[in-house]
Length: 347
Ligand SMILES: NC(=O)c1ccc[n+]([C@@H]2O[C@H](COP(=O)([O-])OP(=O)(O)OC[C@H]3O[C@@H](n4cnc5c(N)ncnc54)[C@H](O)[C@@H]3O)[C@@H](O)[C@H]2O)c1
Image (cartoon, rainbow, N blue to C red; front, side, top):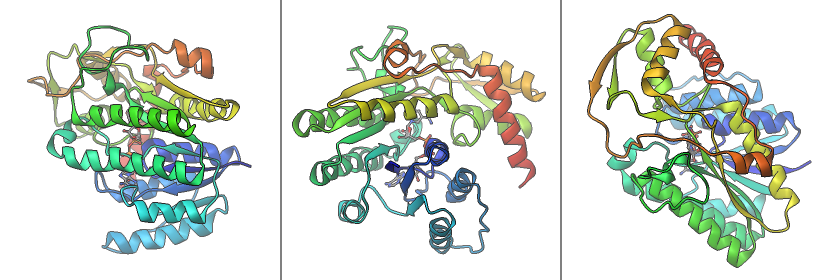
């Protein structure tokens, strides 16, 4: 039975990964500080969903609830240990490496989101760069040589070349967030080259599905459609995204864990996308069709940092990981709305 440390395991992607790995009889140690990028109660509910448990939030204070929740999860399932810890805190993280034995790390904890990274670039630098460096440094010290890490399609930046391939030049970064992810890729390379840490960097392309972060367009639009609020369309609606359903991303991460375990040495970057572009207006139309709601649109200026298009060449992931995304966009949106409506009803 393998034991994995998953940072950011209470988040959107992390909690889906926890669920999948528990179902495959892994032991999991989750490190997550329930940061305030969005409501910590959503992260509690993510981990309840992942562990098939339910937890009652009793207090007004976040710290009191979290303390109780950590105890609750740690007693609920012997295969998961939840640690409310911050990856920015080297000494605290060191205790985790000292106290627990694990075979590898899937590092997902980060400040995510392109637009907010312009407001607080130093917060992004601290969590995404320093936090990742702390983990790599501890991997070196404690001889953990197995590191799967979340990167992002945003590293491709300002490029006319489509679709994006892992070997493309990524010199024209468009946002502080993208810069932090690009730096993580380079730092991990340095630790691979000098300390033989095996690394897989995964460039996720806009991930959606049940549990999607509420700051991301599909979730935001769903709420606005349901409550008949204006939806801001930045640009002319022709911008496009390669949307990837959460189950396909999880399949890509688990395939990466298996891939890295078979290698004696490895530094690989993979695009995990769907290899299909959906324009913003197509996305709105599909969401209207599936939900039955009517969109009230307002067109606004293009936002700084936004890429006009993301589009993944996934042939490398197909060839080396056996990655093959299965969920088409309409089916994925249908599953998203099933989850979304249930969640809104239970409020
Ligand atoms: N969702 C996407 O479309 C997408 C696309 C590209 C890349 N990514 C990357 O994938 C990863 C997961 O994204 P997500 O959508 O699940 O985001 P998320 O915000 O839901 O999850 C991130 C988790 O990290 C935790 N965290 C943040 N700062 C921390 C810290 N200092 N210490 C410990 N934990 C901390 C948060 O509490 C959260 O639970 C991130 O690295 C993100 O940059 C996501």
